[in-house]
Length: 520
Image (cartoon, rainbow, N blue to C red; front, side):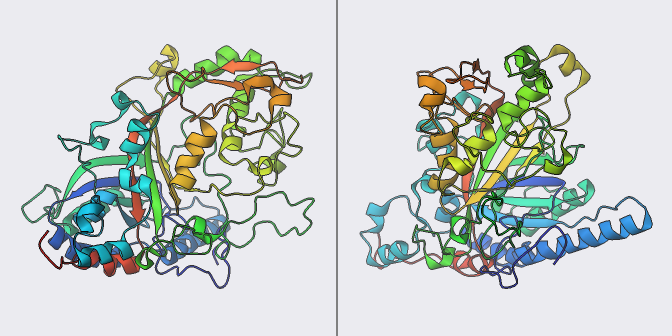
């Protein structure tokens, strides 16, 4: 197995059947998201069946990573810089309206119940999950905390019936920008777009309604605020080999590997009872997040004095940033090193659990602690695998000087995550934990009635909610430092999708819809 990807010998998931961005993750320096609407369902099904042959599976990703590692080993041996290989990748996913367009989903069960054939078909094969059926706009704007004035028009329902315009998304990735552009053209051509110029012609079976382009930053692995991203991903039982060989439970504090059914439908741990055709698929959440980088940096400078200082650790903006995130920018956990990121041995370390949980060392409301509480809870029941990528250019000298983002130079994160249940995964993390002032629970004796506070990075509030704030460790019990927070991450919309298995793409989804026994 390639270095950097340790897998068990007999995986519980068929790696030839799984789309590779779910696991182990498509290699990418550049990524294009093609959000589409299905124009001609019958012809599209034909295109989809053949497109399945070009999907980058988990098996293909493993081979890609072997190529990357071999090139790195060769470069190290010869004392040269590693050459980037294109290694293009393709995945596809569908919203509930996309499955409806294919005749595989219904929003009107009462009508379906009137026909015995359709009712039998949809009762057996309809994907379960109310949030997937609603879509992100209905969930997070109509019933959630997103501001509709901040959502991009393409993510909004349109018309009198408020129909969603995004039926699916095609993910295209590569390590080389020119290669990515060529791959995007090939994908469009496959679905009937004109060769070379990519314009829509009469034979096209989809309309591209929105294109979002992401790219990694010059500082490898860093998102726009400067933090090391994609650390502490959940390990999956039966897929990922144990990363910590230590058997002594007193020293092995890493989170336990999670059941595969928390990510993949139809596997151990999935309690939703999904239809058989959905097995080995996963729900994809796409979230378009703008980041106000100069404003975040200004806040850190203006408020650095509020972070707890020691004789050897003066208050700095870097320390405040670490306490808001839960890790220093190089990845060092605050729980292991609350005052300095300088210890290289614990850089990116995952062997911690916030114990003792009744000591306020890493802020209880730090982003990483809100998203994965570790010792604050008994188990990992809200689990997602993150696959996002940054978008936009670097902050300009003019923006740094003005301490304000230029509206014409937007940047941020194209957030992607996978889970077997959106309500228990993404939705639970963002609403029950990140935006809840009193989570983690049972901290009143340490913090007073204020509670830990809101997730400083992604926490949201409504107008009638308490002001955004966070409790910072200050050596006192109860803690007295309550830091008021600005907002630096602006949700611009997104959508909920289902990423099917290869078998489902070739079979069930490419097959004709069920026929009614009688005219409805």
